[in-house]
Image (tube, rainbow, N blue to C red; front, side, top):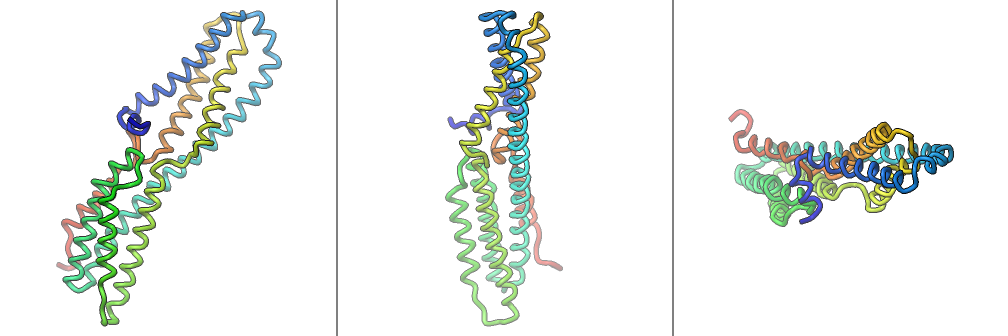
Length: 268
């Protein structure tokens, strides 16, 4: 089972609890282990130097984490808008088909409907697993493109309709490619590596400190670990827009399919 399949199988609260829980257990556990091994007196002698360095490490990681979260949030929103735009192009192409002769328009609508259904029923399950679409949807798009490309007419009055249809088809192709390119997320392995390494160092640093009373120290360390873990969970969640328990759904596509099934030509 792949990582995205595991994420998809988890409720959002469980994934958040797992990421935050691991962060807390690691940071608090390491702190208690070091405290027991070296003692409060030895660790207290490090406070002045360790405190200064920890301030630098904490600020650097906070900036990095904020940069990553803002970046993936913006990409998530852009992907969501691209899906809405793709559904809009489906509907515009559907409306445009009624400007063609009846036989040609019917062929376009049939091919468009087949493609839209394939996007909803075949593309989306594959994208949720981190795969770049389905063969069925690709073939349905190829048929739609072929159908539009085969339409020819000597009627000059029909040329704006044909050109507009081709333009809408090209926009649909561009939006499909944009959607599929966002499946695997926008964070590269290098960014993930730096993010994880920075998180480990930040969560390990409280082990260099010790107070006389262990209770308050554990609470402070746990609070820090929860903040880091929650932000890291947010980065994971937003980086995979089509995966996870709270992801971008094909609802806009489905809504357009329902409209295309019920609507006819204007004035009919």
